[in-house]
Image (cartoon, rainbow, N blue to C red; front, side):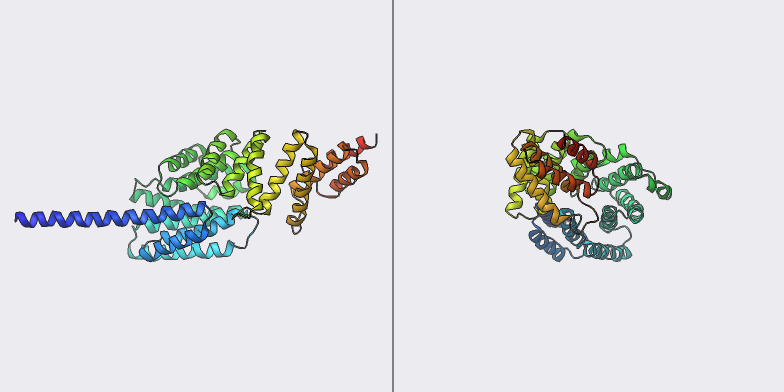
Length: 382
């Protein structure tokens, strides 16, 4: 009897060790793939999640995170809609897979969690495309799933990302876009303060959603709260961890611009420009245009007129290509032309300056650009 007890305990220890090793391998693959995505190493991430899917075919994580690779391709250039259909298809595949798992076991917490996550990310795509009602519907459908996953596993800190996103944006978006308010009466009310608390908890304690939670906190402090000091904390934290992620890096630069610190912004945008020139993944012409513009502003402030002119001329050249198929000219183009007019005036090239200011009047009025151009033309004729 004693021998059997010892044998049982021994077998239990072996089983526990194997189970721990499996969990450790699973987490290791997930985290490696996630870090590859944020490092914009999409090919490596794809290989990692394919391995995860092959080793754990009954778990939705491999399929879900494979879809996240496409999500970050969208994030690199939100104006490019070429990946939208593929992203939606991949998410629908995850949802169907999770539904099959739930038919077998309606308390499969992984299936509930990743189905909710898929609906949530599809809603995020709809919000980027300003399809607000569809975004709200997916958010409404995702929220009960997140709550259900939390009820089954109350120690799961990752679900707080979903709680936080819904609570914050369910209040913040109708405030910023009042025309959405009538539709929101059909949805649970939001709570910005609680949403920030939940996102902060996820950013500090979650297993897989830590980085995404930090990213959300950075963007909400930047875009909605206008709290640039807090936004900068998260932006620098993310940039330091993933120095070649263009999204994180550009936010650091933009926040410095908002704070009026063009000296620090120029350091960031100079590095972005170099990475664009070196064709690093994700460092595209959109970022190059933005970089040349802010570098030009910094040169103007330092009275380095020649360098400023070169920067704004490059910004204008890029804008002509990037704005070609757009309904209206970008703010970068409008302001670059205004600056080129001011530089020409400053260097005594009056006719050239007049040409630039008249060009401003021929395109859309951006941030009072028409009045600025008219006043500049009046001063030229004095």
